[in-house]
Length: 124
Image (cartoon, rainbow, N blue to C red; front, side):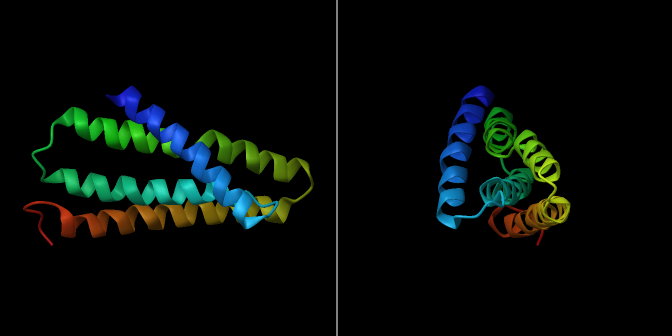
């Protein structure tokens, strides 16, 4: 179940990240940043939802570890940052790191907070 979630997450990341990158038409790696922020939000939402859910632990693992783990990508973020820095774009590399980390953290906290409204029997 976890591997299946990871496979679906990886393919979704590839398709959605590529679509966002092409649609933005920028040299800046917005596709990866978008999937990492979105994936962080979904992970937070799911973690909060599953805190008080009767869902099977394997379902939780398949969605959070598998799908969200496959959907988000630290390796692409790292190599894109390296590419910006090696191209002499130090300011853009720093902006990418700060925006990716800051917005991903805000997204996971936001998703976790929002997940409390959807979670069964969750304290609000």
